Length: 287
Image 1 (cartoon, rainbow, N blue to C red):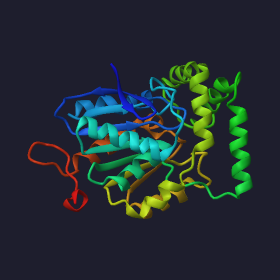
Image 2: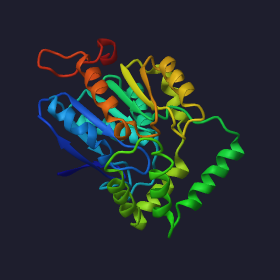
Image 3: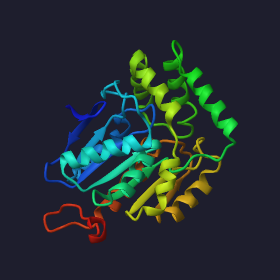
Image 4: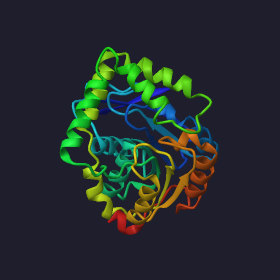
């Protein structure tokens, strides 16, 4: 069942599964995606006793399209608000810009974030001349305009971003994405996000992150000039356990669930708990 959390500019939609007393896990999708991107992970998390909340980004899925501000920081704020609403601390699981939002949240409120699970993570911008960045943003705004925007994003998502191994349900998922983007308000929100998105605020906070972390990087992810180098940077930047997965692009959570699911469950099982099984953060994070 879809639930909603009120925020200053609108409501964030989320689904909630698992036992009320279970350790909380919050799932954050990436740009242009839906919370159903986590379908391979949600069931195993619930089966392992976790309380799982999967949210839709601002202007995406079942969330309101009234938001004027988008990006990593406000998404991180939304995730933290949901953790406080449901009772944290929590493990934040994020894909793409959702991973950046999760990382920012861990730096902002280490008392609420007990662990990070990151897939296809954007924790910094690609190094490009300013003129190239501006041109890329302009191209995206044009590419994702009406009337072709929904079809363009669906094609890019299915082909380029999912190159290599594909989930058996990918076509169904892409059809849902395309249907959502056919709504002019959703497409407008998506275009606003592409125009506002920068990962610079996340990179600035990376040195502050002390939260335990695991990351999954696709070896053929087209969003990184050198995925192996990005994986190595992540390993050093946030002291994460980083797994580079062959024949996987930007969505390890559904391109390689046979890797992501067991490694994630093992990571969660090793996190500190109190006597009641609730997730714990270090005393220094609670100060």
